[in-house]
Length: 337
Image (cartoon, rainbow, N blue to C red; front, top):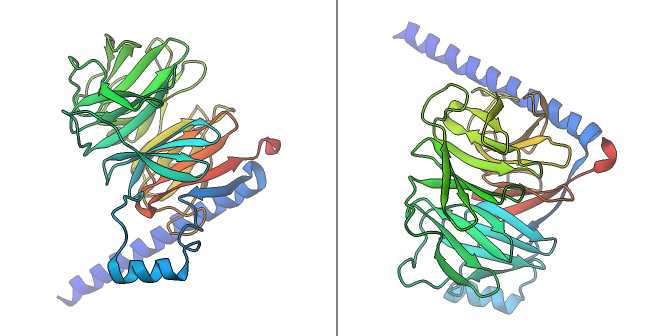
């Protein structure tokens, strides 16, 4: 028994040493970010001033009678920006879509008699003419709505997906790419929702997947897919031909633990939000690790199981900080490259 206790204690000590080394590596990488990449925190929404702006009377009423029957952002999993003043956020906990306009958030009330509740919102993307697509893996459907009219309907109701998650629009090819996680593949649709082709099957070889999740398509039509349980990113050309892949499982900087959202900046760098690392890691397209930002916590620039990520044309970086119930915005300083 004494021998077992000594072995167990020794194992625990080794674990702590390993974690400390991994944390030191992350700190060193963050130092590199500050010197070369200048990724800086900009703001978050809901605003940190939201509760502080309440009057004393309002706070007392809430304490006595409870908060009003209003839904607040709880577990954001994906974010989309259409213009610098408007953000769309999928809240998986509440099953609603928030629209933030000039830092003020409101629920987008989507009307459809058949599909009243969305219990598993995952991915969102925009189409031309002020239209938005989003996936719900419970309904196994893609839904489309007009942001102006708030009209909701399934995007080709004859198509039933197998746990659709990530979704992206290719402006170059005028195609919609949707990840089917349970089917270990990607389906490609035209703008009317007609199926064009399917890419991939389950496996570990190039072009095969093991529970893929997120997807991003850049301006050149190049497609980046998080092959989650293969712990890698796969890159395809605009026609769906395999180009390259990078990544492997690990518990230190430069590896993947639970890769979630993916996006690229104007330099072609690949950003991966990793929920278990509570950080965003950045690579070049050959898979060379460049830098990272974020650590576990609740303050500015800290994360608690981040999920979705989106980067706009000005290299503003939006991260769905899921369990902190917020979206944080960062800026990549162009002058540092």
